[in-house]
Length: 147
Image (cartoon, rainbow, N blue to C red; front, side, top):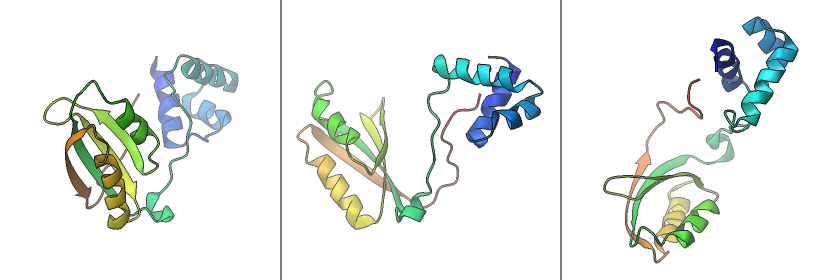
């Protein structure tokens, strides 16, 4: 990846709907060359996906929480991971080092719905202990790394 690729990626991260023509003007490269570079970065897996980021509050999802949890047996987690994968209010799940096995980001409507999600997660027999914290506000949120 060179400086031009980094410039293209930076533009796409700000707005993935930016036209190839507009990108080509900003990076001083022909539109076909920009399109070819974008295709190469997509084919190589560097660009994982083009997506739409929604505003949770516009959808009535006003509560963000982070749940840290430990499983009873670290190697017996298929049921747990399947449940997490299929829970619509779970945005992300990270496998961790340290005191807990996983950290789960939950974005939901309110504390009542959060309670339902937490109860569902805790009800799997694989969960040994949890700790949940509620975010009061978001100070920084990015959806991708910098090129």
